[in-house]
Amino acid sequence: MSSEQRIVERVRERIRDDQAQLGWEEVTPASVRRVAVAEVRRHNDYAFARGGRAIDDVDACVAYVVAQVAGYGPLQALLDDETIEEIWINSPDRVFVARGGVSERIALELTDDQVRDTVERMLHATGRRVDLSQPFVDASLPDGSRLHVVLSGIARGHWAVNIRKFLPGIRTLDTLVELGSIPREPAALLRDAMRDGQSVLVSGATHAGKTTMLAALVSSCPPHHRIVTAEETFELAIDAPDVVAMQGRQPSLEGTGEITLRRLVKESLRMRPDRLVIGEVRDAEALDLLLALNTGLPGAATIHANSAADALVKLSALPLLAGRNIDREFVLPAVASALDLVVHCAREPGGRRYVEEIIAPTGRIIDGACEAQTLFHADQTHREERRGRRRGERVA
Image 1 (spheres, helix red, strand yellow):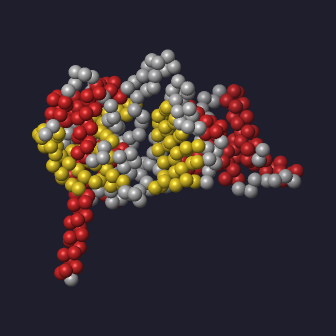
Image 2 (tube, helix red, strand yellow):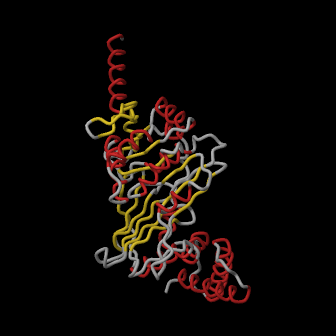
Image 3 (cartoon, helix red, strand yellow):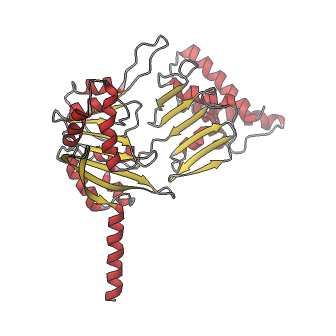
């Protein structure tokens, strides 16, 4: 056993003793750090006196001990790295991260026990569980990052772990403009739409930046608006003076106590919202969203789709999952009249995320689909910029 690992074991023993004697209810990084500093100094004093190997980099050793005892072990350094936006483990010896939308495999090898111990430590504070009866879990970590785990047996060979980190830097449309994700004029259009109480749907593929865009849109709401959010797992980071955030709940071991997204949407209507926000629409809760929007309550949500037009088609189909008594003759007009804008996000191969198009439903149904007009398209903007440059070259 290495010197660092022996210090980890001694710190754990001291904390267990302190918990028993002093009645500590929670082990915090600060409390672990105090004990770790004392134990590293004790180790070095003993090493100097006996001619043993002392710890040269005290700060690094203390950080390692804190990560092992109060943090998330070998993953803590990755979680602390602000350039990393996502971490996933396919197997203990195959760990990947994403920076700027680009993935890479890193030189980190874990053990099955380390993966299990880290996941259990992450789930400890969330009230969620993963076991044979519940082999999938979605949970929100204390810093807002999202954890998703699939047990081995469902995933081949090893646990599959994905951590989508909470990145607080992008909160507003102005920030997205500065990053080049959206031009200034369409950003102003979206800002005015949110201030005017229009309903906006954000679409895109996985990792296209839908949740970031949704949070930026909601941050543009008037400060006096009461915002109620409903998510399966907390992901949205919204700065607002009057906001209530709710997430679903898994069933208990007895199969009771589950709180679905549909239930959250219905409960949110009793909370006097000025705007209803649903993190992601993927099932029958689309019906409850449409019913809420057609009462005059503005809303915002995300949906997986290949284009803005496909998002309208998908939103017109998902309510049909709510039951046989729901038909397209009811749903299509509801979608056409409820939504004001659809914002489609995309991601380039190099990782850059941007707004590809913005469309506005006209309220009419043409050939069994919601008609919409294009307000902005990134390709058109690029073509106009190229034409402007060519005109400038000819003048020169």
